[in-house]
Image 1 (cartoon, rainbow, N blue to C red):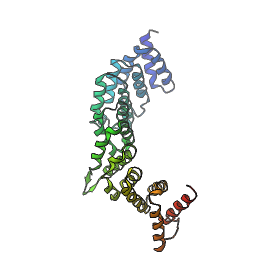
Image 2 (image 1 turned 90 degrees about the vertical axis):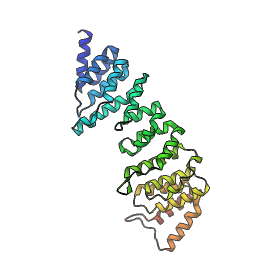
Image 3 (image 1 turned 135 degrees about the vertical axis):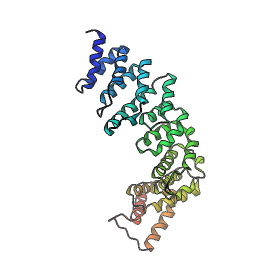
Length: 315
């Protein structure tokens, strides 16, 4: 069989789950002669709810490289996903586009990176965030920070922001001050963005950069409050650390079990900051008649006493 005919046959086999992996390996072994067929495969096949064949073609082009491979990947990465009406098909093709976007980070050609910068203006894609974790182009920082409002891509955006190091701190601090309202109240997505920024700052920021953020310990949103507590217990100066310890004790009244668990961990970890405050809180709650109960929800006193017992036996 002539090489081009073999390549065409192998490319068609990408749509056969029983033969697709072996077909791709053979295409890769044939080198860049396979690129035109893989590029044509992406151009001619329609998006489907089963995206594996197109993902394999993207992977093949990323490995083989070259101008034609890059051109095909840019087309896939920058396609208008909103034109796909079927939600299942759109979700599958979004994965393909995301993988193509990530592949662009592996090309040295400037227009590959320019395409990624343009994608920052579009709907957030995991692959774009992951690409800038590799590239660390500071022009991406404001977009990645705004993507912290998008739950499905926030984790990848956070990792990318951390990769920028101290360069991201000014943008993070500026965004932390921005509350995006809806009907007179801050939107949930805006609150989650600010909480995620605090979590990133807890990993990234030097202690002096958190000065002036103490008011967040009194924020109306407990998610923001709990992240501010962790930030100041770790990086705050002595007075804000004590304030954060008090705020942590108050959060034990939260109805959110995960918040209470996080706060218990923080109080035990940073007990040296406010062991006297913990003792005073235990005494005060006992005087008010609170008891150590575990049902239907564990009382703050029960958690405080557990922390006290753990500290006495060394954690």
